[in-house]
Amino acid sequence: MFDCDGLLVDTESEWLATQARYLAVHDATIDEAERRALTGRSIETVVRALSAHTGQDPLVAADELMEIHREALSDAVGVLPGAVETVRAIASRVPVAIASNSPRDLLDDAIEGLGIADVVTTSVSVDDVAEGKPAPDIYAEAAARLGADPAETLAFEDSETGARAARAAGLTLIAVPSIPGQEPVADRTLASLEDPDLHTWIRTWETTR
View 1: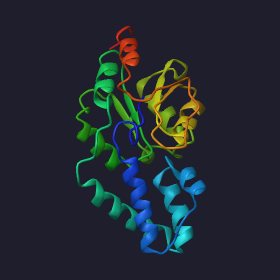
View 2: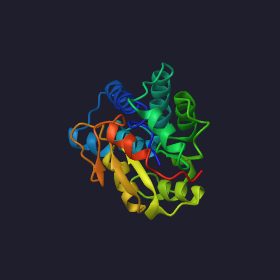
View 3: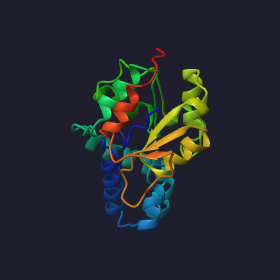
């Protein structure tokens, strides 16, 4: 299973920039500790936190934030190194799921933009579950859709929020940190999905497709 934002596509930095732009428009700020705590959280959680600083109704704040974010994402989103190659390599061996805290429309756009829709067995967005990451719901739902035993399932994450969700769901976790100052607790940590040892290891897997 793969997270999406910050792991496969470079949307995490754009989302942080969107939050900064929204706060600046309303002459509001948040401190570094809160900014880091919100990284990787669901849009609903971020909206509640930021609207508390601006005094704006959360529904209005959500519309404004998403308008800024979608405008930014209308430009080509950067594919992170090794992302497509790793997804395709693993999908050639075992079923693959994308498990993301993004809303369904943004997740579908990302999967299409990456050109991996043909090899992804299923995807789970924050809209598909009761609670987003760091709760385990997204990963638990993805495992159920794959018919997979969580104890025998591998997750890739870039943030501590996502890592907490994967660990809570009982998955084995590989972290590829993308957020300065965050080193998610994981079974293994890689600098990039381009890691040659990762791809050598994948080639040893038995094919179950």
